Image (tube, rainbow, N blue to C red; front, top):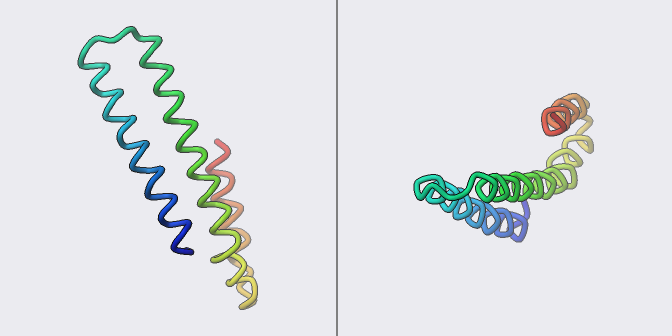
Length: 87
């Protein structure tokens, strides 16, 4: 994984971690359910964005490298991963 991608992923995950802690605090403070649900939706969107970024990097680095080495198993592995992400 390129260092700049790793750094971006870690920053985003730290931000998400903070959002999740915030949601936990909202639940503890009995905040209005709709407000909590909106924050949960934001976290889910942020996680999906991180997944897309990682998937893009994975395709351009790991998958491409294995294809260059004639490792065709990587295609099935990649398709299985994409299928899981689409659930």
